[in-house]
Amino acid sequence: SDFFAIDHIYDQGIDWYSSLFSEARLKQVCGEASTTYTRLPKFPKAAERIAQVLPKVKMIYIIRHPVDRAYSHHVHEIKCHEQKPKTTFEEGIKERSYLVDSGNYMKHIEQYLQFFPRESILIMLMEDLIHKPADTMEKICGFIGVDDKIDLVQNSPIAANQAHQDAQWFLRSKITSPLRAIPGVVFIANLLPQGLRDLAYQVLKALPYYRKQGEKQSYLPPPMLPETRQMLLEKFSEPNLRLAEFLNRNLSHWNQ
Image 1 (cartoon, helix red, strand yellow):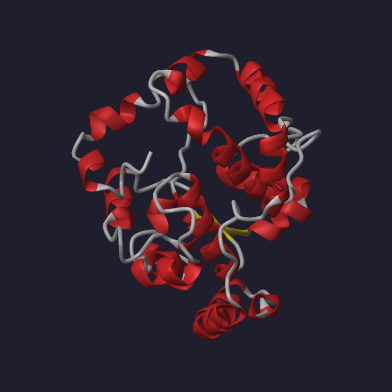
Image 2 (image 1 turned 45 degrees about the horizontal axis):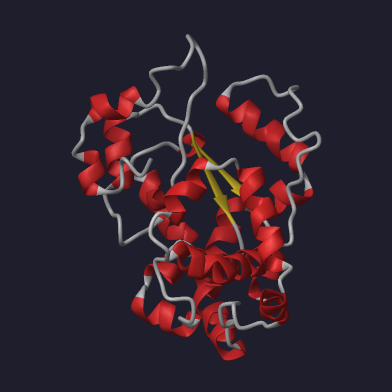
């Protein structure tokens, strides 16, 4: 909900926040999630506010390779139309320092430890969720106090080709942009079932002009330059080492 991080949302008050859980059943375990709660220094008040309102809360912090996370964050902002499609990653990190700052995981952990005991925070690696989903979900269930025997991952694909998904999203955005510019089209499209919208897109994509668009790579955001990756690997080297010591876990693969 971003409630504890963003001032104008927090100003709506605790009663408003509580209303988000008004349909919860008695003794039901409830939660919410927001990446803004670990985005220093852009949103510095989140940890303290959470501690004031929910001092006994249990938190799960899912982390991943910090350089890959930064580029993924950049692509996400383009997909959300927060940045121009042709914005390079190098331009992005220069203009938006939080793309890199968000990957300094120990900085965020240390801030939360000023307000919460260590046992209130479960730190998980995204790679464990992908490669060992059952074990990971069992650990999460045990941490939050729900039945860890419930199969939460059966028939649920965890891993996906994110690069392919991003490419398909940018292609779809490019193909449909002329139509979306027509007044009223977006409103009407939003009234249609997703299946019907998908079918219309497939028909449109099959037209000769749009087939050629699909053969191009211009709709993809520019990739990260090798020298940029090396610079970021060096920048994260010391924080990653401290994190590895804190977790008592080998994170040397994050140096590549």
